[in-house]
Image (tube, rainbow, N blue to C red; front, side, top):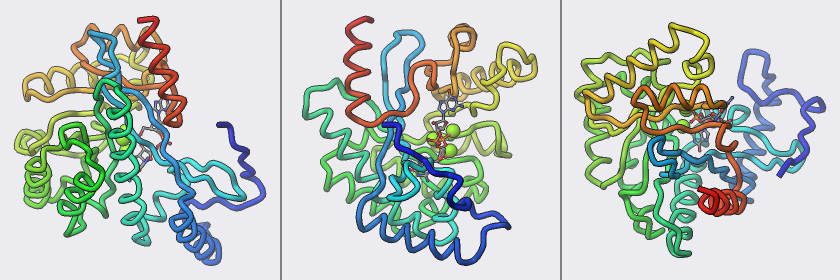
Length: 280
Ligand code: C2E
Ligand code: MG
Ligand code: MG
Ligand code: MG
């Protein structure tokens, strides 16, 4: 799984001010080819219930198996696909692949678990979003209740639009979570109104949770607020026992992070999951 990455031979693909026009064009044509040739893959990271210790779901995270540059993390290509619109076909590929995987696991007899998929702003704004998700669910045979769509606070800034879109998605029977929660500027008043199911506490607050009093206060505020609003909470980026212990003591339902495992390909997840269930 540790594909070679030759970072130094190429300039970065990240669309910053230093990205030259020809790099951008090359990335765009590489991305188009990558979509045609399905050079993308999904890595899965488990979400664990902190009371039962059970794996309740996985988050699907896209990687690009670039023919020359090796395995690229999403941070190196997702931003540009959001700019040039290629996130729409890529996002559909991700959704379809994630749904197929979830269905395959269930068909193989695995206890059903949730499948979380990240949506980008561009996808969220797409007019046919709801119809497209509906048809992906139908085509793949995935049960809607096992699909969780992750959006970010910034996508809810147009509250009218977000409320309406989320309501239509909820009607399909899928779950909605707010990713990277706490890093945006969503108003608590609107949070109450939005038809969402879960908050995912951003890992920047979890990182120094047990050393930094402000982070601890932020995390406990989020978990108690979520409880009152009847929302689930997942802590992202859990890396050690101390964080896990703190979260469990402070009413955080679920956690995700390197403590359990990094995101891994489907076959490795299956092994990991089987092993974990044997020892648990
Ligand atoms: P995210 O949705 O917040 O996903 C969690 C990220 O945190 C993942 O990075 C994961 O590898 C990382 N992570 C998980 N646990 C730990 C930990 O304990 N410590 C540390 N340091 N990091 C941890 P990844 O896979 O590089 O993804 C980065 C971001 O790219 C994602 O953040 C998400 O916003 C975006 N992304 C990934 N896949 C997709 C996709 O299919 N579509 C869209 N639109 N965005 C995606
Ligand atoms: Mg996410
Ligand atoms: Mg995110
Ligand atoms: Mg996140």
